[in-house]
Image 1 (tube, rainbow, N blue to C red):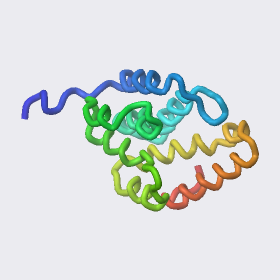
Image 2: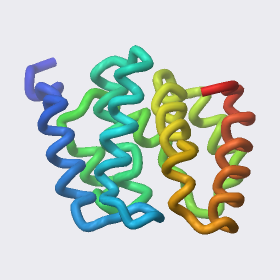
Image 3: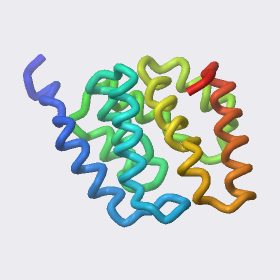
Length: 155
């Protein structure tokens, strides 16, 4: 193999910049910049002992699902195979049962840590408090169900 077969992966700084640009015009359900969520998930992965491939995946974890970046971009991007596999694993597919989604995460090395950090930030009581009661209740139940499917307890 030549060096061109495996280009040097993007640095975390570059991955962060790409993610911030791709999601620049998006907000979360409470109207906050979506990039705040990406930063929190990346920091959560780092705090949980994640490696650079996992941190890169954290920055990109919603990019495909939110149509911020294309699947083709991910395939062509100079990222580690592990980062790409994790992003694919944590990307929900339309109509996919939660059980199928959870199984894919559990069977992809490194993906569980990224999803754990994502769920932890999504379920943060301060973040949920900004939502209306029906939305807060629905999301709290949804996140608890996914945590159970993934075998995650506590925070």
